[in-house]
Image (cartoon, rainbow, N blue to C red):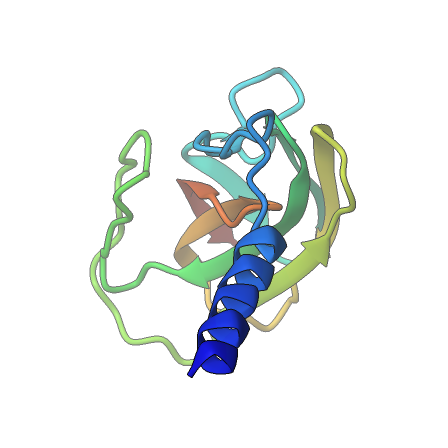
Length: 157
């Protein structure tokens, strides 16, 4: 019985020492930031893009500890849906069915930076549906916090 008690106490001591606490470690409770609201930020709300053209999509992202990833998502808004983080609402065309919409979704990794300017070159195909679209940026930090921003855009002939 004495051996069982000694073994149990030794196991608990080993387990406790393996789980150290570092009083200097703080939990990251701050989301990263993302903005297109600066001179070179693109596209601004209600921007008009032309089929057959190439554009550089730009946003600034920051985090208090470390950025991990970002993404760009372009998708049609022919059904007039909204995003909870969306800024200005632009004049929309009539609701319509998508036949050949532009759908662009790309994810990119970062390693440890606290500031970064997103620059993504996107060519708008000549054969996609024109009309209302959304441009959505997303950023994630190394601890998993995420922020998004979206804007209405139009793609024309």
